[in-house]
Length: 257
Ligand code: ZN
View 1 (cartoon, protein in one colour):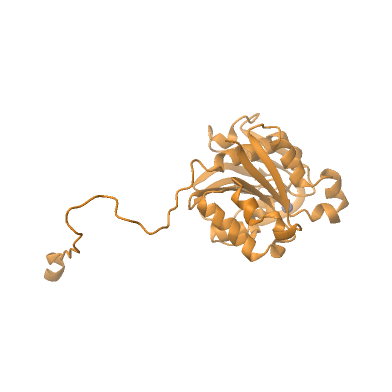
View 2 (cartoon, rainbow, N blue to C red; view 1 turned 180 degrees about the vertical axis):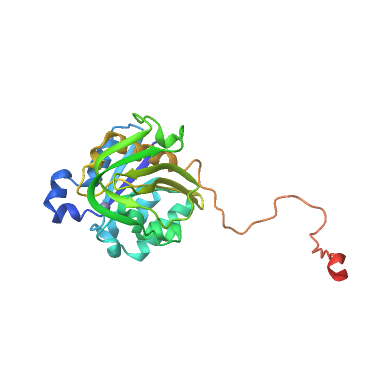
């Protein structure tokens, strides 16, 4: 079965900022989608904020195994009901890859239950993204155990997230800060991967290793099996000759205290 990935993008900066438009003439989502389309086992679709229902209709969400999310200047324009539908699909098993400033997006904040706040500095500093989980599938095919990006926005700790279930990358910036830049969480039947790079005025989504991590991330958070409903009325499975009796067990020791 091919893996159905929907690349979601806010797609506003490219329309307003000539620098961003020059780096990503077709939008950041197309730079990411273009890479993913090279894999014949992936079926790639894109969706953007200004499409009806942000391009995320019930039909699209139902037929998405993994959703990637980049947003920044217009988090507030994302309709609450669409964010809720995204979160619901994650609980049902859809994978979610949240990129860069998506740390403040409605679906991410909702799924984390924390503010998602962090420190930042837009100074085009060098970033070293260190692999801290060698052998993890998300690091497959990287050219070394450290991805170097010459110019990026700095994100620093403290990053207000729940402790990740898996920590794959830690970033170092030349200003001295460090950051948990590759984290995985499980929510319901779904998995979420947060990956840090991708400030709009730097060409990070043209970096082969960054694209490779996004691709690996999509594969890693993909539903592992058919979704099993985990909330349903439950008929009795084990046969029994006797009707079930309610049994009250009294611990005598409690009364002796
Ligand atoms: Zn940024």
